[in-house]
Each structure stands twice: as structure tokens, then as C-alpha cells.
Length: 446
Ligand SMILES: Cc1cc2nc3c(=O)[nH]c(=O)nc-3n(C[C@H](O)[C@H](O)[C@H](O)COP(=O)(O)OP(=O)(O)OC[C@H]3O[C@@H](n4cnc5c(N)ncnc54)[C@H](O)[C@@H]3O)c2cc1C
Image (tube, rainbow, N blue to C red; front, side, top):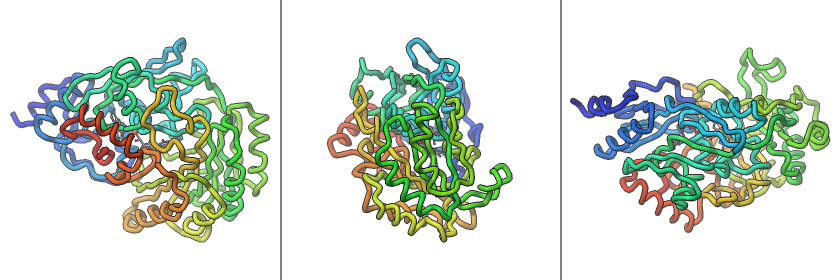
């Protein structure tokens, strides 16, 4: 038997030629030596042990939203068959497998008037997102997604299974919540749910010509908002001419003001009023919505799209920072960069989690995220454009970035997410759980 035949014979799941889904970011080649689709934790142990025996790195993919470089060689574990969500309404928790996307958790929690602290897009994988911290539509009110992890089940680099919670290996529980996939494969996660059934939220779209006024008004207005504004951001959008987009947005350069408020429609409308009057909106779609419609705030793309992203934390958003962004990405720039977003953070995210964790960028006031499309005719220029927009904000960079939002991870950027003390703590856990350095791929802490 060849190596992979031997592996295949030991699994309940399969060794696949390709994942059963297209990775959300298909820009990069995925050519592992073995692509394993486990159906249970024993398969994960088998795959990790086989990789360790053959001296191969292990990468994990749930959806490919975080794929930002090629996968060449090694073992790629796709968690697509590790599904299942259960909600315990009395304890207000959800337990789910590694292949579950946020949409499935939202759907399971909604009938109980509960919601997870998910991200802007319900298509993102709930485990990968949470391990990287996770800042989403509820986060200013409730903190990072990782702050709400109750328990994780993990297979480490020695093939050992850990139940990780506050009562056991506390260093691992600290590191896992924020240190991403550096310590092993998480097969199951239990998280707290929030008592949120509805919110006042959505987006107001302004013409691109109003970008200067909207961004400057946002910078002044957002600095003084209460935490019940659980998210707000402003995004410069260069939208494609797709028939499914409403006519005023189709193929246009527009500015989207995203907003979510947990204190009811009347108070929410009062808070939003100063922004609504900055310019005449093309579309105003902020309204009372069931939590299950939370994707309508950001309206992120749902189909796979080849992209290059980059992002950074900002410690402040003065008028000079707004001008610097408009200078490189505002009206008059015909660039293949469909999104430049500045999201307000702070609120509950700025406070330590009840049980401290390794989430990076807690002191960040705003997150800047930039996404460019790697089409055949733009691929050469897009990385430079996207990285250039982030570089324009360098004078206002916060001390630490958010792990989930750095885009293309390099060893230097990952190492710079924490101070020396926290990085040393993370490395100590990594050396213990992953002595051969199998895990992390481009996100490896070094
Ligand atoms: C459209 C879009 C919207 C987004 N919105 C937000 C947002 O609002 N807030 C935010 O914080 N981030 C956001 N992100 C970033 C996103 O959180 C990260 O890309 C995240 O890593 C995606 O996780 P995934 O599992 O879906 O992706 P994948 O590419 O499948 O996995 C990414 C990485 O997560 C780790 N991982 C995944 N599953 C496991 C596992 N079972 N065990 C161990 N490690 C694992 C691995 O390191 C893997 O390389 C967004 C990204 C996109 C493309």
C-alpha cells in the first residue's frame, strides 16, 4: 500500500481529490499531498498521526474564507463533514462541529430568541472565525466571539484529544481563544449565546460623490456612540454590474453606512439621524429586523470570489486619517478594489474577557479592511493597491492588529499581534501541544 492508501484504509471518512465545496477564496492553488475529510474525531487523530509520522504539516479548512496563500503538500483536513449544531436554551449555549458555518448556528438559536456573536457573513466558518477572535455585528455590545467560548474539543500535534475549558488546561484555554489553529484541530466548540431576537439594523447607501462628507461625518459621530450600537462601519464600495443588485447600486461607486442597534427602533433612528442627513441616500435599508437577517447589514458576497485582502487596526480616526484614505481610495479612483471598510470597535471588545484569552487587538478603536479582486486582468496590480491603501493609514495604526482581519498572514505580522509576554506564553503552549510544528500554515505563531 502507498502512504495515502494506508491512510485511507484507516479512516471512516475519505481521502478526497478535492473538497466537496469550492473554497470561498479560489485565488490560490490547493495541492496537498493528502486531502482528508474526517467524519469523526478518530479520523482526525488518524490524519494528524499519519502526518506526524510522515513529517508533513497539517492545515485545516472549513470554508476557505481565510485561504490567503497556496496550499502545497502536507495534509489538508477539510472539516466539511464534521457538522451538527445543538442549542441548549436553558444554559444559553450552542455546541457545533468544526464544519459548521455561522448561518447554521444562527438558524438553530433563533427559535429560542438567542443569537451567537457571529461575524458579518453567515457563510464564514464558526470555528475558524472564533479561534481568531471574531468581531461582528454584536461585538461592541458583547465582545469578541472568542470571549464566549465555553469548551473546545481539540486533537493536538501528538494525536492526543483534549477537552479544553476553564476547569482544565487553563493555558491552552487562554491560548486557543485568539491564537487560531496553532495548537491542533478543533473538532467541536461550545459557545454562549446572547439574548438577541431582533435588532434595528441594516445599511444606508449614499452616492460615491458624497464619500468625503459621509466619511468625515462618520469619524466625528462614531467616536461618541453607546455600546448598544453593537456595530457600525462605513465602506467605500465599487460594486459590479450584477443584475441581482438594486438598480441604484448596480455597477456604482457608493458609500455604505452599516449600523446595528440593540435598544429598539425609535432610539436607534434617533442615534442614526445625524448620519442619515449627511447626504441624500440612494437606499435606506436600516430597519427593525429579526436576528436571522443579520447578513443584511454588511451584504458580504456569498459566492466564492478570488480576492486579496489586507487590514489593520487603527487607534483613532481623525480627519487627517479620513483624508489619507480618500486620497488613495476615494472618488476619482477607478480601482479594482470593491471594498474599503472602516469599522468601529471598542465597547465590550475593549474590556478583557471574563476568563482572559489571547485575542489580539483589544485596544483597537477601528478596523480598516480592504479587499481587491484577483481577476486575470487585475491580479498583478491588486495586491499593491490593497496593501497601499492599508499603508496610507499607517500613521494611525494601533499597537496590535486583529488576527482575523490581517489578510495575507506573514510570520512577521502574526508575531506582531501580541506583546513579547503574550507571544512567549502562546509559544510555550504551542511547543507543548504541537512540538513538531505541524499546525498553523500561514497563520503559524513563530
Ligand atoms: C466575506 C468575509 C467576511 C468576514 N467577516 C469577518 C468579520 O466580520 N469579523 C471577523 O473577525 N472576521 C471576518 N472575516 C475573516 C474570517 O473570520 C477569517 O477568514 C476566518 O479565519 C475564516 O474562518 P473559516 O474557517 O471560514 O475559513 P478557513 O479558510 O476554512 O479557515 C481559516 C483558518 O482557520 C483555522 N481553522 C479553521 N477551522 C479550524 C479547526 N477546526 N481547527 C483549527 N483551526 C481551524 C485554520 O488556521 C485555517 O487556516 C471575514 C472573511 C470573509 C472572507
